[in-house]
Length: 400
Ligand code: SF4
Image (cartoon, rainbow, N blue to C red; front, side, top):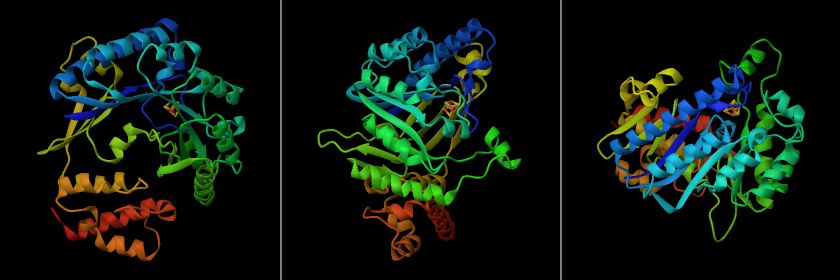
């Protein structure tokens, strides 16, 4: 079984006001000692979970690893170093020479010590959550913690990081978003993720919206900014391969994020750590496992061994309908569209077979791309509408 591995490290230096990911701000921990203890216990637990999951699944090869969160760079460097060593020992013989191994960082915690730790290990892709180089924009989106001279900080990181670098930028929050894109480009990243701000329920920013302290994101500005960003980046040697992701064109090497491609192409992955999700697509069953977000419970299962590992997760068997729908939902995000070979191997037909009415309608409106089941730039701006029509058509025909 070939698979990918996602490792969720749920700590951040502070909580951003728009964030609905499972992450715990370390600044809420009272003492340094308490925070370090928690980090150590959690990392020990993740290694124990990895050991158990590998013995359950017996994978032949791990194609990609993504250490995300949260903010892995917020972990004390010595602890992170030991953790990465532990992971490498457990994965010995399973990681090919060509594996992509990514880690996420935030500018304020991407220190020299953190970069030194990465150089001791096989990490070959660093993804930095910049969001914006403009302090006003960062305040507006509720970025909790960032350096004053954020551009110089990220330029310093680029100067000492010689492997693949990806930068995350938020677009369309203010009208001068192109400034951020230009600054990001001047740092010579190999990959850029450009997301529009969404205000999720149960976040402080949502509360601001409900109480009219902020305006909702301007959808027209966001759509317009995505179109201008794509055109600008394409002029500067990047190409869009997913709705929010751009890779620097290189004839000798693909700079696309192989780990995320595994998700978009509906390949299996194991997720470890609190709150992590695993999707395992066996021939005879498709299952989704979700780990607990209760840190004490997680630690009692995997660090202290006081509870059975199974009490720490819930398992759901995906119905054929949900599995089919997810292929459309994930694959349609890609510029190339849904991978027809993977789709056909699973459903005995190509992706066009199940949704001919939706596809011919979107084709007639000039919104489809050249791929087998793909949207063009304008079509991608209407992705939610496309998926709602796909859902209606699949439900109406009742294939399963
Ligand atoms: S750094 Fe990322 S994961 Fe952490 S709180 Fe901010 S948005 Fe959430």
